[in-house]
Image (cartoon, rainbow, N blue to C red; front, side, top):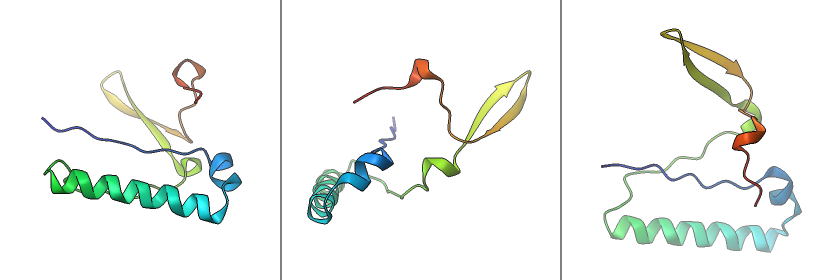
Length: 80
């Protein structure tokens, strides 16, 4: 079985970090990636574009419905 793991930080939060804090956060993420890779649990990783470039795909009546922009249904938003 394979799983996907997505790390996300809100743009406003990212912008509010100092350069040092942002660098530390990235180093911690890379260290975790390395640990998962050593354990054979990480197949790969890629950076995604900003959520402002997102599209949402849904199956409707047997065909794919494409909605421009990120999915923002408030029922699925998690506030951290």
